[in-house]
Length: 232
Image (cartoon, rainbow, N blue to C red; front, side, top):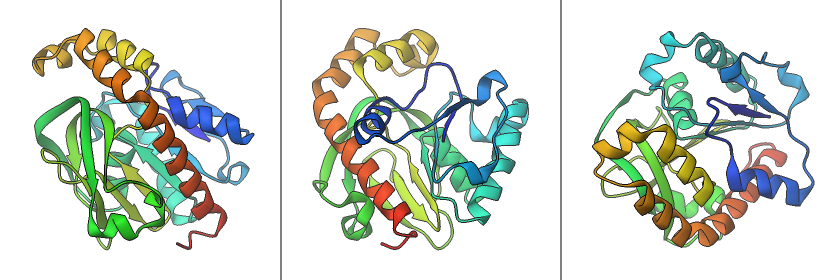
C-alpha cells in the first residue's frame, strides 16, 4: 500500500520497480480524503512526502488519522518504508524528535553509508556513497535503539531502521519530471534556497539513471527483508 500525502509527490522509480516485479499495489490518496483501508489487506506500507512539517500535522486531519493508522501498523510489525516526510513521521511515532535542519536541502546531493549502514541488508549492493535528490527543511533524530545508516555533510541523519520501520530522508525515486513539478509547486522554497527550476531539473536528470537503479535495489532489499519476517 502506498500512502500518498500530497498531489505532487508519488513514488516515482519505486512504482516503476513494483510494476517490473509484477507486484500489485494500491495508492491511497490520503490528502484527498480517501479512507485508510484495513491493515490486514497489505503486506507492506510505503509512506510518501508532503511539504507539511511533521510538527504541524495537527493542522491536517488526514495526517492525524494517518499517524494513528501507522502507529497501529508498527505495533503489529507491518514493514513500513517512510520517504522524507514519511520517514520523519515514523521517527516521531517511534519516540524521536523532528526539528528544523540548519540547511534546507534542495536538489542533488551525495549521501554516505555509515558503518552500520554498510552492514545493513537494506543497502546490500550499494556503493559507500551515492547520489540522491533532496527537498526538505526538517530532519529527524534517530529513534531510540536504532542506528543512523546514512548521512551527508549538511544533514547527518539520512536513514534508519527500527523494528518494522525504515526511514529515508533522501529521495532515490524522484524523476526529472517530478523535480520539475515540485519546482512549480514549491516556488517559494526554491527561491529561498537560491536555486532555479532549471538548475534542479538539470541536477536530477544528470543522476536519474543511477538513482533509478539504486531505487530498484533498495526496494528489492526492503521487500526481501519484509518477506523474510524482518530478519536481516
